[in-house]
Image (cartoon, rainbow over all chains, first blue to last red; front, side):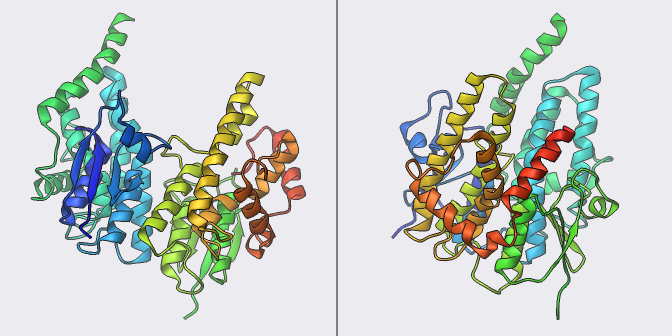
Length: 224
Length: 233
């Protein structure tokens, strides 16, 4: 039976990017189903009744939800280009840092987006501190996965694009080549990868979107 | 070659219990090093510098953190005994997804943390709202049980598996909460599958020899409440 893969996503969903990167690395064909989160389709609600979110990967009619869990599923189902390390300890480490990233990175990035002045300085410092911990996991490798992109690269990958968009909006470097040299190099290597580089959502649309998210917070400060 | 396995933890912690259950199922000998979860020892800070929490499994000197990641690690690193995660990718997905639903901080539909909300509910109305969510969650877990167990006695089928451990670790504390609130959460009339599962799980050695008895947990709970600190977990 031919494999049928559908990906429920939005045009900008950062976590859907994880699934896209994994599918592309594995060389898998899939159909994009774009959702409007303000008016969710009956299909999405049927496939993900528990938290009604994207991304959802539907494989031969069976839904798989939660992006990191989707990555594990993809890796277990399609054996080419393995994403997770083989060694149990390295696997546990990869899963730990992916989880850490999820716990910390979203809120850190958000804090950078919505602040300015002294608060932005503090938000940036905190972000850099945590990014340093993540950078340490690179050790002397090109990718977290070694010579090729793996699970942890994909787990962090969505930040690569978003960070560069943020840097343009706030007109300030977040991942400084001096402070975070290895991470900086990793971001470039990841972005330049032939499989990855065509997957990013349209940059101008992203800038408009995140600028609009930042505006109300800037206005709030001014009006105080 | 015998490997050296140590577990930094505290026996009333359901997260530590998860690891103990997995080690027991795989017949792995280990040394439990009791840590006081409220006073972080040097040893703990060295083993888990990022999150500074128990449990930490130390296998031949290498630390592994986060209870469910440790359970997966145990499954990956040792071949003895049946696998804790199902071999079929779709079944493994269900086990992972529902384990996230139970208490993972990164998702916003966690079930077990609702009990903390219940304890802290300021009004009767707020309390009722949380109770409704808890029972809604139990109905979902019942459906998950029916799907995962496929008619067998555990989420893992014939044998206790990853999801049994993820949920089962809470059964000791759940009995404490039932005693304190006089509410039966695992009710045969509402969620018969889960109620039956809980009974089977709690009579299994994996549970009985790992989780402290209910009365002991009640004592700990009262002592901790008296001190004004949150209960273990």
